[in-house]
Amino acid sequence: MGGRNRTGFLPSGLSLVTAFVYLFLYAPIVALVLLSFNNSRFSAVWQGFSLRWYALALKDAELIQSLRTSLIVAFLTAAIATTLGTAVALALARYRIRIRSALEVLVFLPVIIPEIIIGFATAGFFGLAGWAFGVKTIVAAHVAFSMSYVIFIVRARVAGLDPSYEEAAMDLGATPRQTFFKVTLPMIMPGVMSAALLVFTLSLDDYVITSFVAGPGATTLPLRIYSMVKTGVTPEINAISSVLLLATILMVFLSERLASGRASRWSMSAGAAALLLLVFFAFGGGGAKAKGGELNIFIWSNYLPDSVVAEFERRYEAKVNIELYDSNEAMLARLQAGGASYDIIVPSDYMVAVLGEQGLLEEIDRDRLTNFSNLDPQFVGLAHDEENRFSVPYTWGTTGIGYRRDKITESVDSWSIMWDSRYRDRITMLDDVREAMGAALKREGRSLNSTDPDEIAEAARLLGEQKPLVKAYDSGGFDQLLLSGDAWIVQGYNGQIAKAMAEDANIGYCIPKEGCTLSVDNLCIPKGATHRELALEFINFILEAKMAAEISNGTGYATPNLAARAYIKPELLSNEAAYPPKEFLENCEFIKELGEAISVYDRFWTEIKSR
Picture (cartoon, rainbow, N blue to C red):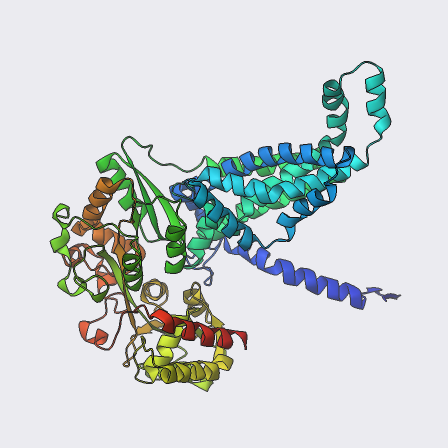
């Protein structure tokens, strides 16, 4: 296919295709590693080489704790799965078992069944068994899906053994036990070690199954990274991801070498370096040890500054365990499944109503909240919880239009600009059915909570017309697309766009004249919380003016705490994306639970996304 001319080799068609495939596969990984050295907080804006994100990752107590959890889970999973899998592999290879065919099918099933099914099934089983979700349930689930890989690798090694060595040992008087440990095991050890490394790597990297069975204090690194990504990728995430990526590559390389019998001193050193790298990072983070009780918080990523957590732990001599979710629906599913015991959750307004209707919330003793009077009256007694029996406002925000002033020269004041063909491939919409449909409904002067089939159908038609103009449906990285100039106009959350505005003066934010989504996230105590008294202390602590201000300054989202405004950074308080004037909110609405009508929204949204 290729040839050679006088000047050298001519690339063949096959080699060009191969090069393109490798470029397609690995260019994003190379970009991730390079951007981990970016001095800017936003990956989309290069501001020079820096190692500070690795230093920050090393000092991030929550991030490092999640790495420790991942390492503990991976080591336990590798030890248990390798021991059990090796025993099963020897039994299948050496003994005649009547139900061997059935057993082999069972061995294959965890490999071919989708991970989401395994995760859902194991979560349901643990819930029925009454097991509290945590490290032990993660390990049990990981062993269940990874043991098959051990059986495949070790069985292949056993099949290639020369039985004469074992027979000779037995002839010389060795017992079966001695024969196994002094002859059989040393001969299959490369396969066993290869399987153990592979299982360790699979467990370390797993997200899907872990997300179903993790509990308070048991957030693994993939869970934390995924949750952090939903609120915007920063070089800190790139840094820890690069460390995990490098360690994974080295361990997979060593696993392959051991399995093929080609392990060398160099490859063994590479594997040892990978483990040392992970251990170095795992023990690099700090964190105060618990002296009093523990508080388990289930919250959005980057929504509770470390300084606030540290102050609460110091003042109350308590240990705060934080677990993250990336959507209200994910949080609801976890609470419905049972098994996980949380003391504080932070649902959005409409989800408070859902949780209340399902009896999943504890009533809050308002008499214990001495700082409740700090709240702005306009955020008290809202429709989702008119008496604030179950919820206390935490932050609030809007979903409007972010845009680049250097690209969009006309006035931005209406949702209709999101349908302007001049901005084809420069528009992004949120990957959220209620937000996207809500924008289309608002454009037509309708309520974003409409249950009228004709109005919903018209909104879906408009989104279908808009789709050829849309660059991406993105709920996490729209701010970075705006910063990089890949997108000029985006539907987005005000908090993230406010941060982008602080990074680039060319970025603006608009609440459309037709109105948009208004949201309030709330502090709630879930039913069955084991530390209710400490949870009430935490809520009252958050309602302190200085603490509420610190949360707003750290997250970029507005606080409903009126007393906190005296302590909020002036530049944030004057940012209309974070703190819009009251008159801008006149046509804004809270998202409400729609009952059966939501199935109509979902059906149209599926059709739009699949076109």
